[in-house]
Amino acid sequence: MLLRARTVVPMSGPPLEDGAVVVRADGRIAAVGLFEEMRRDWPGEPVLDLGEQALLPGLINAHCHLDYTTLRNAINPQRSFTAWITRINALKRQMTDDDYLAAIAEGFDELRAWGTTTVCNLEAFPELLPKLPPPPIRTWWFLELIDIRNRVPSEALLEGALSFFEQHDGWLGGFGLNPHAPYTASPELFRLCRECAERFGMPLTTHIAESAEEEAMFRRGEGEMFTFLQGLGRRMDDCGKRSSFANAVADGLIGPGWLLAHANELDDADFALLAATPGDWHVVHCPRSHAFFQHRAFPWHRLEEAGVTISLGTDSLASNDSLSLFAELQAAQKSIPELTSETLVRTVTTHPARALRKSGELGALLPGAHADLIALPFAGAPPEVYDAIIANRSPIEWMMLDGKILSPPHSSLRPPSAGVRRS
Ligand SMILES: [Zn+2]
Image (cartoon, rainbow, N blue to C red; front, side, top):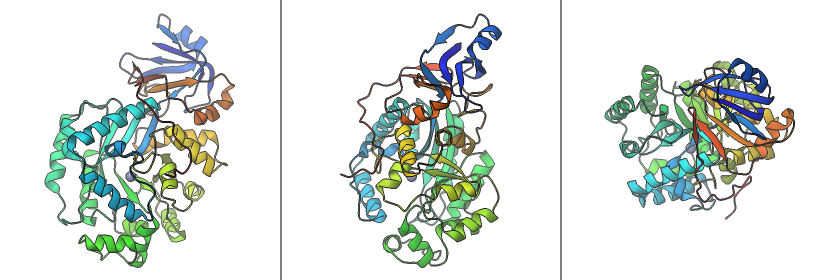
């Protein structure tokens, strides 16, 4: 099939006016170029003319918790991060397996409506996986692991999950591991995850340096989170020394190649450590969740200067009010206006693709890539297209996943906000 649009945005090269994408029957892209050339080179291919639209790669959400989709507006901003954790834990205890399955399905609908074709979903309830239908978009299921109370790494649980993964290699996407955070997962659990991920070629993600309370706990052995976790029986002998980031790097828990969520609280010493540890570092920023928690300014420029690749995520609806990556782009642009629109669009396309080690397959339109595409109305000149993508405030009306045209779900969508939610 030959898809024609007013502007094609390959991300692997400049935008093309009157462009076209040739999609093969196996769901991959055969060619990208000017419409006239593509029509000449691919005679006989049926043409679908999308008209006055920008055609671009489907968006990639690098950090999401679909389990909590039904908790939208359920938690007001709290006095502290620890208070929020206590509140979400109380809400989670009231939810049944069916509630979570419904939340995941609702989340997928919302992701699709906002043009997301790939999601990194941190799954807190691996026991739900056998009850799930195949995901409607490309999904990396990161198994969330926590062992505060039980210090013994749960090898049996990992083995069970891995055998499930092996039986479901037909699902679009893949599987990864998520030792939740250094404050909830032991060094032993981090190392076990690392070993498994290396053996099975899986990506890894964790939460790091998210809140000031986490840093008070690790750096100084004090604060609300310290007291809360000590009360749960966590061994606190890794506290009172270094930052959460320095601790985790020095102890070999995290490193280049991980999708590190948040990294809000890095200090000069952390940036020096980053510079002294070469590799492919990735950070996921969740602009609206960041605003919800009123964390300190996200160190975008310093991370970029250190060579870190930044991707965007939505986090969960327990600290956000929609799963729209367009709204995240708008929020990032608002808080850091000097970022170029093209750079921002990369944080939801080529950057997360690289973090998933899928450069050339996802997040860009080029021969051999998966045909995951979206279109949105656009009638301007090619250089304006990145601005128009970021400014989009409407659900996507045309989407292709793995070479198949998907009709977008017509769920009742709430308008997303681009700023701090106050309720
Ligand atoms: Zn998270």
